Every structure is written in structure tokens, then in C-alpha cells.
Image (cartoon, rainbow, N blue to C red):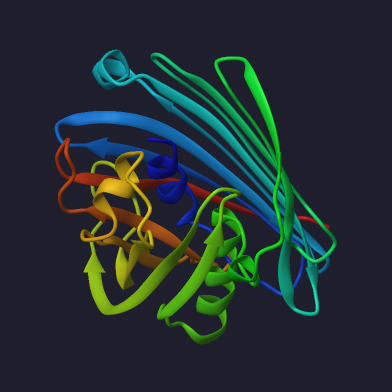
Length: 261
């Protein structure tokens, strides 16, 4: 569940301005017949660094069946026009498990050790240098990189490499053209949107959660609109046509863009 929610949140990392800014999103998440979750996501970017944080919590009937809550945070520097992670951490709680993870990176943006815990049992692992992990990053920074690309060229096609401290996998974006979005009960946003898709290539890794099970052969679609006031592009809708629990739809209820001077 954790990467499933995380990916949906960080698909919204799409504002692109030259100055320092902060963006906050509010989402409603629907899975099958369930109004499953309200989530918040905030990120800030300046010329030299960036940080991202989010919170996810299920509620209502879905919370009774599949309780889950989590907090995520990434910090990083921007050097030579490249985003380099300096730390990544998350904390989550489900019905039976409490998990935490902290990744620490060196000055070149490479992870050097991982601290993780499950139900209070902590484990620290040194991450050995590996040529297969060069030019990889954490999952959240991948979406920051993709956001910057889209802001510059208004096109989604890209393949980016991720290493999460244990496994390497690829995130594949594809451009799907344009579609008209209408405002509705769950989102006030409308207009001609740019449609993109996302796939996870797990490179032989075994499935361990819901995102792993659905994203290799079922694309995650997302629709990008432009905020009228700030002209910042943002995600208005996210959709997976089929999951083990039914169709997934995420709507942006509100977006707030502020200067971060």
C-alpha cells in the first residue's frame, strides 16, 4: 500500500517556476466503491535545494477494512542543474505493522546506508557501491525530475532509474495526447488537459505491495492542467482502470501555490 499511495501523491510534483516556490495539494482518493482517503502533499523548491512532504490516511469504511497511514519526506540539493537527494524517510502504520525507513546519501547523491525498522525492530545496513545504482535516485525525486522536464518541454516521454536502498527499478512515462476534463462533484478543475501514463518496470523484483502488482501491466494515467492564477501545471486527475479492489480515481480538490522566498 505504501508505494501505491506514494506514487499517487508524487505524480503531482509538476509546478515549474524559475524562482523559489511552495505548492500544496489536497486530494480525494477513491478505490472501487470506497471513498478511501484524503491526502495532503506539499513541496518547496529554491534555486539550490528542494524538500517534499506528504501525509496519507485512510478513513470511513475503507479505513475499517484496510487501515493505513503514512508520512513521507525527501530533502535534496540542486547542483549543476541536477536534483540530488540528501535524505529520504518514511513512517507508516497498517493493521498489523509499523514501518520506518531512513536513507542517507553522500555528496554525490548516492545512498550510503539504510536504517529500517518493522514493529520496533531496527536494522542498519551499509549500501555497497554498485555500478548498477549509478545515476539512480529515490522515487520522490524521480517525479521532481519529470516535473521539471514537463515544465520545460510540455512532454511526458521519459525513463528514469530508481534505487530504494534494496532494489533497482525503472519508472517509465509516456505521452498520451490531450483530453477534455470537466469539473464535477469531487474536483472544480476543468479544461483541455495533457494526458500521460506511468509504468513501473520492476526488473524481476518480487511483488510486495499493491503498486508492484498493478503497475507493470496496468498504466497509471494522469491529467495535467495549468493553474489560472500562477500558470503552474498540476495534476488534476489520476486513474488506474483496474486494481484488485476496483478502479482507482484520484481528484485534486484544491491547489495552493506560494512564493517561498
